[in-house]
Length: 484
Image (cartoon, rainbow, N blue to C red; front, top):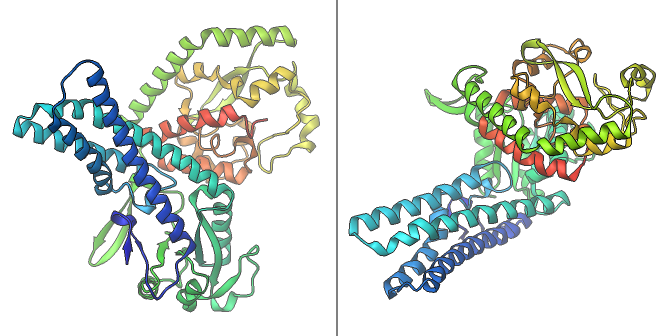
């Protein structure tokens, strides 16, 4: 029996008991369908109500057309892929599918009205459908936030059996535990036959590589994640996929290449073999010019709009502690070029000279220095740091082209001197005022996590990713979490 819409269909076999995830998935899809329908209905009622209040005469045919579009709205979104299970929870695929479905319906109605010379459809194309689209996008955004909150407390999770070697499985478990919004929970593992007695941080070992399908069936897993390992070659993966079909268990295969995703990756079949093609990231050219122009224009506009608040902060700093309001420090930018970053002063005068005496109290596990209760920070400075207001003067660095709005954290020269070969990859792009590190934990991150996020940004940067990070930065900063 098949339940659902499009590729998000939930398939139930009468001989197999229902998984818990299939129950909440069906309920979640019903909520999405009902919400999308309500958005279309509200938009139709609003547009027709405004026209009636303005004294316009609305024929019966127009009411019928409006009702038909309300019914057609969730069907159009389904054709665009808005109800695919894999699109929910993260990424832009869900919003892109909603937009494509809504835009497709608008185009269909507009072309149909033009072909039939139907004037009554004009108000629907120009007002009702765009309003329904905006409402649906906002509704999906709120539903995603609700889903993330549920997953943060362990609900609405998909159970996964991980297949691979100990190190890769532990890394996967750490990633899923640290980022529960992915909705993945590792409930068991399958290891090589000669290494099944190792500790996996509480994750039970369910069997060897030859027992994956049986292990997944025993724990009613929703998916099997095969991590990069030489034992699971093409033939083994094909046989595993066949053995998982009867239980309708999803199969995920992780490539050996880490932290590279999105437009850079494509599958190209060659001689019957699916080859993973990885394009090089673009660090020069037209896209970089667009990014630079965008950064400078936004930073310049922000300085003009926030001139009065910035001057107010300057005055408060001068009134509450001795020393200048601005703090200049040498940082390392793109290709290792040094520049002077400007920030609001948040510490007592001469704080750099006191740093050496506090090295033993460093709470960071890498080359950076961080303390939760740094005695050098002034009371006003603590408030500025909590909400990242101390970094607003870096907008001048962005306007000068030394920094970007989004990018890796700008490091100190002494930190760069301790970089290994891999970490120096951070220096191929301009440092940013915010970045993946900012929206993923800020100072609460470990050194390894900070480096991994910066490298992920370097490998996958795009203007769309920058806009997403800027959007998330606002909510992170207003909560004031992870900053000290």
